[in-house]
Image (cartoon, rainbow, N blue to C red; front, side, top):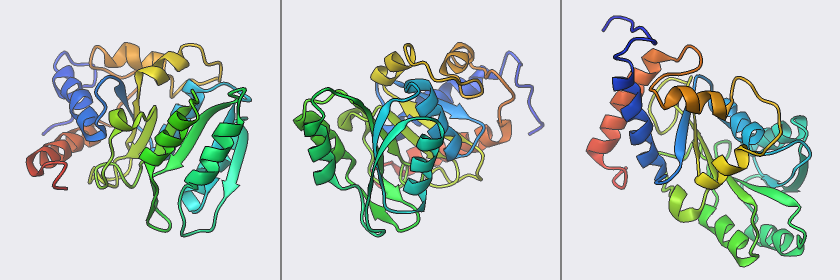
Length: 244
């Protein structure tokens, strides 16, 4: 098909169904999904800078190259990072997470991070176990999940597991070239974003919501990849996510 005008009156016929259908892959029932023209790394940054404030304490673990890069980003963005270093080839240390959360009586920890599938090692971590640790400690921290190489390929249940920010990218389970970053957020994360004070511009939730609700984007979208996403979501629906 010929290249499309991203401001045309017909453009929302493509985009609005995409926003709804991609939510089904994340199993996000009550939140929303943002589609950024970026890699998954951009969606990492979007999650942190929209939902958290400078100096917020976050609990993270490092057990491979990509969990390491997420920790590095959090440190460079000015968060107070409590990082648990684990042997590569292991996953999120649920017992240590539970211990840290129980000990945090003042609720200084604002977010807990989990890399569901560490791409560098292929090790899968227990996202539901992270939620269980938070619930057992009666802790209000947000739950962030890196699902770049898992969502669409490995069982993921955002609503059921109480995941507040789930990150993915176009080049893994969504079967596309790199170039789209997906960020699926809960109602709780959207509420947190309204009071968070970290600076952001390109990844602004406010700008995206205002444009997305009408079927548009605040800047030039990757229209060809959005067409590819339409085809990918149709394939996923045809095969069935549970079968995949």
